[in-house]
Length: 198
Image 1: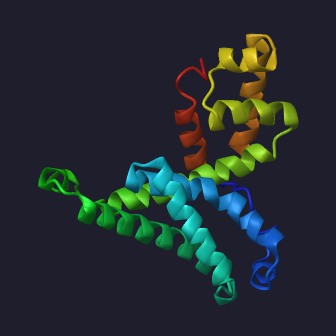
Image 2: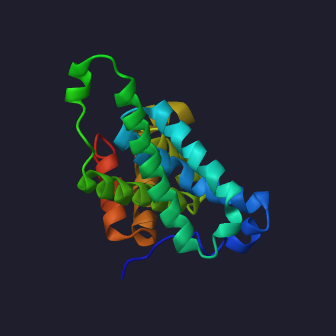
C-alpha cells in the first residue's frame, strides 16, 4: 500500500478563509515550489514562472472566502497557474516583432501539462517527506535533492567523510521509501541518479 505525507491534516482551510495569515503561509510554503516548477515547464522561464505563481497566490488570498474545500483550492492553484502561464505565452507571442519567432513557438500539449502536474505533486510529496526525517538525514537529503549537490560536495560542505555521507544518505532513502508513494520514490531516485546511489 502506498503511503503519502499528509498536508491536509495540518492545513485549515477555514482558518485561511477567516483571514489567518499563518494558514495561508502554510499553503504557500507547500505549493510555491511545485507550482513554480509546473509553470516553468510551460514557460521555460524561471523568473516568469515565479511571477505567475506569486500572482496566483495573491488571487487565492484575495478570494480566500470563496474556497470551502481543499480539493477545490488545490485544483484552482494548478488550473490558475496553467491558465496564467498560457496567457503569459500568448502575451509574449503578441509582443514579438519577428514572425520567425512566432512560428517557432509551439503550443504546450495537454500531455505535457498533465505530466508537469504529476511531477510537481511528486516534488511536493518528496519535500514533505524529507521534512519528516531526523535532522542529520534531512540536511543531507535537502542538499542532495533540493540543491542537487553530489556526495563529495555534501561531504565538503558538512565537513564529513564521504563514506559517512553515503551511509547516512542510504539510510535516509530507506526511510523515504516508507513515506513516499512508489512513483514519487522512483522520481526521487531518478533525480539523485547522477552519483547518489553509486
